[in-house]
Length: 138
Image (cartoon, rainbow, N blue to C red; front, side, top):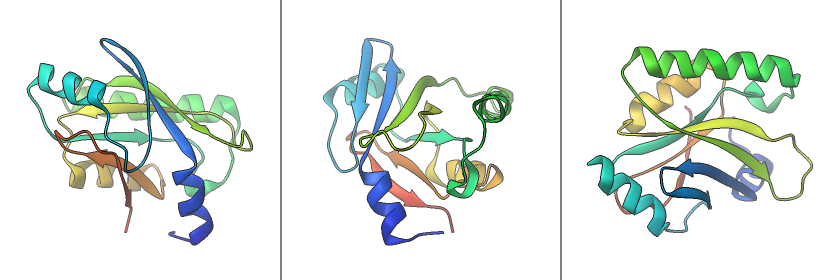
């Protein structure tokens, strides 16, 4: 559910990803040359960061979030995707770190379906320009 408070929270978050050449923290609307290079090396343009933690912005236990992440990762693997592990970190430190995965080659519509399956409000996605966009699940 899109609200001004949720949008502000998602924009005040660092989306940290372990790229093959090293870690990077992505920000909504800010291009990442490191991400552009990683995508080019994979020969893909579309990408998405997906998460299964804290569905509907309702905090779950660390153990439950870990279980959900494992299920998400298994879904991606079964569909033939390989991703870069990451973590979403709230700037204010008032929300627990959320495990995520950045998936090169994952189309936005497919990422949105996966996010909906795991009760997520939004994803972070983009193209070969490496500019993260906040995309709401409808």
